[in-house]
Image (cartoon, rainbow, N blue to C red):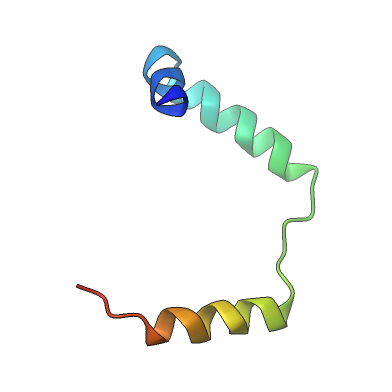
Length: 48
């Protein structure tokens, strides 16, 4: 609820700009084994 309230009361473009700023300074690349493990799990899930 707090996240929804925050987003509703703040400019979405400002939130996006701040997130872009934060993630531009951090390596957020996932290890190939982790990507494959996620893919394997998602491919077994039933999508409705």
